Image (cartoon, rainbow, N blue to C red; front, side):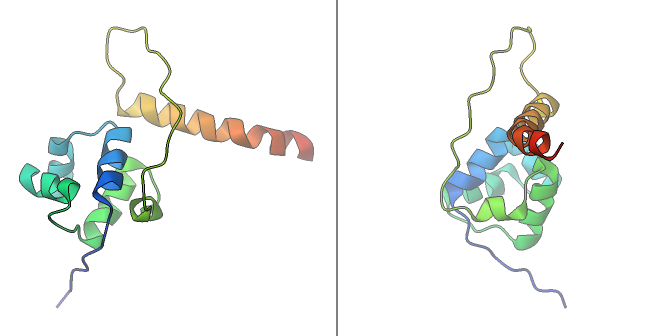
Length: 113
């Protein structure tokens, strides 16, 4: 008999993580195999997500599980202006995030060389 563990998550953080990964509520509901209403209930604070759901989303969003346990959303740098006709998709946002992370590490790498 497996037990599901409900976790307390700040609804603003839950919504921020979804939006920063460029996912819609429908995408999340498909990934978690639940209804859109259930996802919206989590984002409004009416319902607590299960730990299994947070693990699944942390993998999907490419974020650590601990990000869901933050007390408030982190202020990120604004996304660069996109002059293409298509909107930024999930992959583009992921590449920008990785580039910024590597840019922070560059001074450390240069000192070791």
